[in-house]
Amino acid sequence: MAYSYDDNNIFAKILRKEIPSDIVAENDHALAFRDISPKAPTHVLVIPKGKYVSFDDFAANAPADEITAFMRLCAQVAKSEGVSLDIGNGFRAITNAGNDGVQEVPHFHLHILGGRMMGPMLLLPE
Ligand code: 5GP
Image 1 (cartoon, helix red, strand yellow):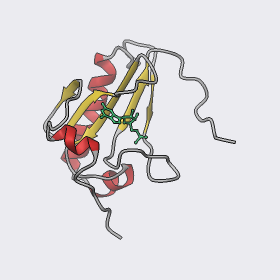
Image 2 (cartoon, helix red, strand yellow):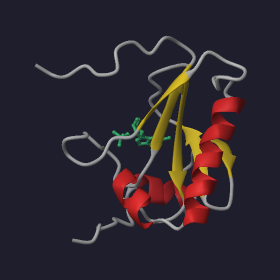
Image 3 (spheres, protein in one colour):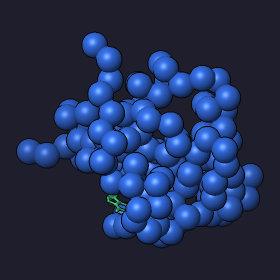
Image 4 (tube, helix red, strand yellow):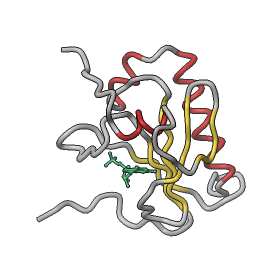
């Protein structure tokens, strides 16, 4: 079954500049902006500019130049936020997919979180 992309999701609106965002960095194929509800001193979302629902959609279907541009922007953000391992103390990169992954916005995004100890990898609800 094909992935079904919703053109009205909130990140599609951010890409079209229909709603504002605090942009951190950008290249031809990817955009990085601050999460509206940060869970750490650094909480940046990196998204592809193409229409991909989730990590698996992006990994399976994006062309190599889009994947490279996305990954390079992630590295650029980690460095500019001072959390990359060459200059900082590290970070956590998370992507949620679908219902079981508890994905809220159906446009693939990577959360880059840092600036404090991130604690256990996963806390499951009771
Ligand atoms: P998900 O649960 O899909 O992995 O994460 C979605 C993230 O998007 C959440 O951390 C949420 O705070 C963030 N978010 C939701 N709406 C907006 C918005 O309008 N602007 C920004 N910058 N972030 C948003």
